[in-house]
Amino acid sequence: MGGNMAGAYSHLALGVLLGGLVAVLSHRLRTLTAGGAMAMFALAVPIFGFGGWKWTLPIAVFFILSSLLSRLGRSAKARYDSVFEKGSRRDGGQVLANGGVAGALMVLSLVSGWPSLYPYYCAALASATADTWATEVGTLSGQRPRRIPCFRPVPAGASGGVTLAGLLSALAGGMTIALSGWVFLRAESGASQLLYLVGLSGFLGSLVDSLLGATLQVQYRCPACGVVTERRVHCGGRRTAPVSGFRWMNNDAVNFLATLSGPGFLHLGMIWMRG
Image (cartoon, rainbow, N blue to C red; front, top):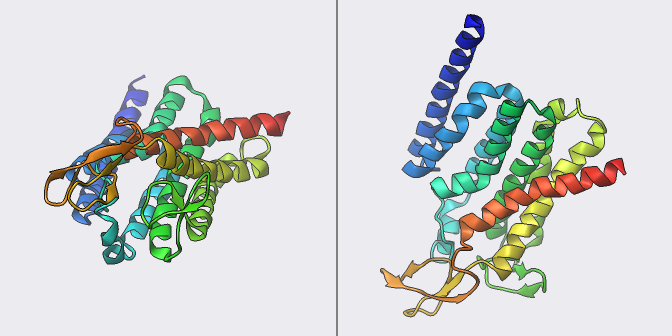
């Protein structure tokens, strides 16, 4: 009993140390705001402390590669700051919207002892990665985006717009997370199919993000310059007026629902695979 408690405390201490290190470095490198660093710490402690490499590797791959990608062409992406709701530094809401589902699945698996939740954890992170990579690469591609589901051309940076480069990057992001968990997914039945299902689920999750962004996400119009934006405040503090979507369906809500859809698509795929 005493040995188990000592082991648990040592794992927790390691999680606090590694989580704190990641949060501080992320804030210093300006990839996370102070609130984003605190949210990252809250997610990292249980995952790093109790999950081991099995649970740590996929979220580490998502965070490290996505952070590096967000720094690529930062000056070129700055022109979209007046359109996107959030800037290049992720805040607490963004961290939880992208990693909250995965963190909840890890804790549920830890408490319940259900190892079968691991593929769903990977699918949630695959969705977050696919969406992040699609946005980061799509905005740099120079391609004219088209809004799904009608595929009508829209201005660069518009919610729900997709490009070929972005779609390919989304697929690459989903498969990257699937590969990061491949050693542990291999223990599941039908491992080769499961690898592709996790990656495809991430890709489909990114399409859900685009669809919600195009149809339900709130959009505002600036009274001063007339631009349609995700921001509530524009042009030196001017309040914008809503023109479409639901007020509660902001960028964080869209990201959360898209990330939640990844495990849902995986579950449907597993039913199909076993049926």
